[in-house]
Image (cartoon, rainbow, N blue to C red):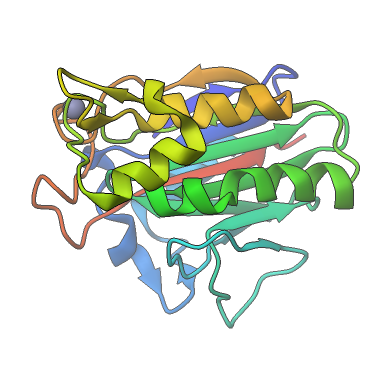
Length: 233
Ligand SMILES: [Zn+2]
């Protein structure tokens, strides 16, 4: 499990690697098994063996963001989770899409967002940031960009590319004929617009490095997890 610390040293963003195993297979229904390597890894990052609940959503490439105020047995369909409760750990699962961890140290608000190109265009990251500030009173949102497919590996052509270019500009495309999409550049543009400070970005690609699962690399069912928590007192 990899960890990046937010600026107060209390908020952390963690994410798993291939060697940590497939997170999907570690769920019993809606609950991440407390016996699983993933749960143990998160517990170790948070410095507490129990007393926290890992929260997930049923991701569907939307711009829906939900607030977690308790553990839910009926997992809602959404692509972002925001929480003001430090005993809850919002997480998302990915394999090529961009996972983003958000944290506000002034209120201890955590959030995890899953964004592919559809979610980026639909505004899922903005929605999560807006929820943190407008609904929960966050004032200094910090961010971590987790492992995702790199621009060199992400050929992106056809009508969708015009949709993305309209939202993010042609500068988010790279390569000779601008046929490769830089997801990270899109995310950073959002951070700039929203006044969010990025404190860390994982640079290794899910596809061309060996470290993570990659949907395009053939890992169609396996996923890594990214989440945000507050270390125990
Ligand atoms: Zn790559």
